[in-house]
Length: 164
Image 1 (cartoon, rainbow, N blue to C red):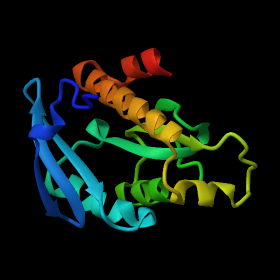
Image 2: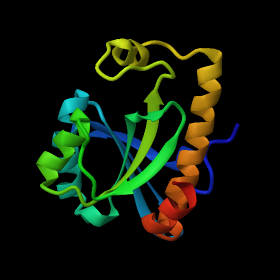
Image 3: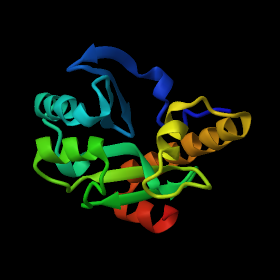
Image 4: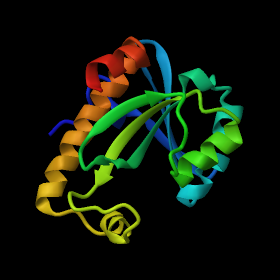
């Protein structure tokens, strides 16, 4: 399966900077920067804050992709200017950036039989994917790339209208 979409992620240059893996490229004459913090998840705001500052990224152009236990495994939703809903990584990002006014692509990880407050979720997010889950992940990656492309081509509001 080709996960590159129109953006061509494979053509991006990879470097380590600000405790993150960073890759830069372009899409329709727009500069794109992909960053994967290598910090603990609950410290990801520290890495992202340095990246936003160094590259002078407008917060309204920021798109954060993250897991979301409020969504069923495999669901993808787009939101903007929302609270962290208990997600420690988002708490860190909002705390460092001092705003929640950025686009989020939320990827569902909640197992079918999850009961709020149970340890089932901890076990689920730390285990290897089954073959069925690998297929779900492949589809989620494909859909997420489509969402990112639409955000870049149009805007997050149009992507929300189409994909939510």
